[in-house]
Length: 145
Image (cartoon, rainbow, N blue to C red; front, side, top):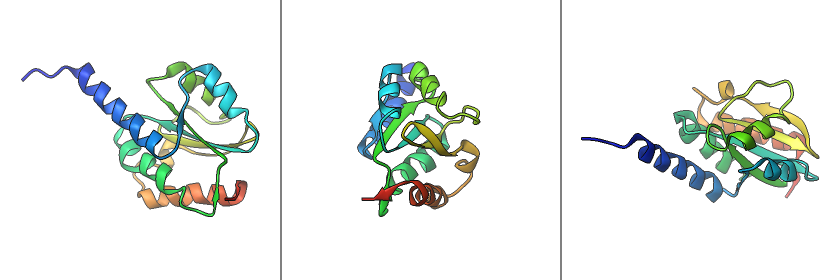
């Protein structure tokens, strides 16, 4: 059996993209997309997506289910680590004081970082624990919907 690894990975990446977009997040694929989205007024949740197991089994489900809450970010966006490299690097420039981490979440308000949830706070944790971390951040920084 001969499997084309690139074809397989394209399927994995496409599925990961579809999941986060279906949850209501806008993909940022260029540095211009990032600059426009992350400098918006209000709160913006950035999900740094990846193909690892903790992204698919924990982070993306948490990104979706955390939105079932009274307070939510005004804007939901995502960059894809390892895929949209320039956009991801541009987004990470906003995450001052934090090393690159994927999957991860950053909550910004008016273009300024409020808080991060890094990979070590996702990997090995239950999805509900990550949902709670996100909702705690929403409670502190976001407005009622």
